[in-house]
Length: 443
Image 1 (cartoon, rainbow, N blue to C red):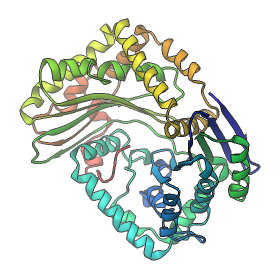
Image 2 (cartoon, rainbow, N blue to C red; image 1 turned 60 degrees about the horizontal axis):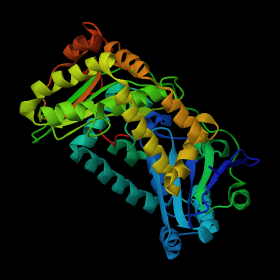
Image 3 (cartoon, helix red, strand yellow; image 1 turned 90 degrees about the vertical axis):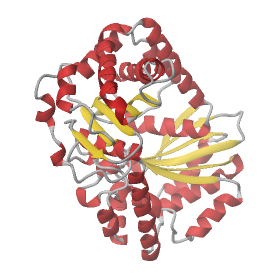
Image 4 (tube, rainbow, N blue to C red; image 1 turned 180 degrees about the vertical axis):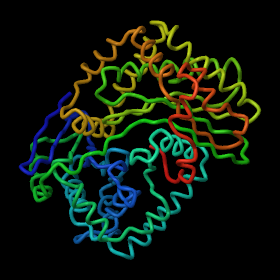
């Protein structure tokens, strides 16, 4: 690992990983602002700002932005998540100066033309409609909202048609001025890159960005809830979730391994029992989303209506057994999966640039892969069993479902079967508090 870190006078962090065997470079700017920074009236503004950054600057039209990067065979893109927004480029090594200049231009000089804004609002309205046309995407949106009802972290990234239509050039500029400050930004590069040269390019292109850390995240409190949407579909999309762990929690790696053991591949418990042995569904897997101060552990399954009554007890049985019978062989297999994924990402400049940028924002430093592997290898089967028991037996569940789901078990019964106690689910929330939500895209 050839990682170097520098900081400009205004607080911008520059981190690079030199990969000398490559002829290309991946670089981008990661901004510590995401959908959870938005007020209710700003719902979807982070994502809209990301779109508008490509729609013209004081120096370049939207077409010129696309033509300049593609004239050198490069790629320019962006993404919005719950806690950060990323703008990234991949180019040949000789074209790194153009890439840095383009990134600084779209982030520092966008004009937010009203006609371009109107067109892009229409595009995002289609994106919102497309998310609702996808039952799986919709189920994830509903789960996020049910887990954190009434909180920014629980709102979808895309916004609603009402909020998206309400945004003006002035509201976009105000949001950018508040959140896009150099102290909350990381310029990250990986591949055939020269750290000192990129620092000088950054000083020239980003040196005038305003100082300051940007706004912090509002706190999040997992509550759990239930949200169902009955639809005439061939397949039901089901998500069962529980409170997870934040990035810096001591059990972060243990719960990641738990997700892999339960539903991380074809050898996982859920795949073998639910699909291979019983044939109850085509797709089933487990996942864990970590955030700064909270997390979400979830299971996704897609099944026909007639199999739902059998499916949920089988899922709950596997969760109950996870707190008692996970063995060292399963943990070793999960460790190997996570290690391989980590090492494969190390070979991709795109993945590596994103990895070191996010590590700088979360930990304030880049984690050596050997350190990550050491933490993974330190997790024992006993640790995973303990985390499973804590997560499933003493936590309030979140349930979301889309499709023919009338036969699906009620959340109160799920909570009782998991040992959370009678009434635990109903005490945490009900569909009535968020029944009108569900627009947008999941994480």
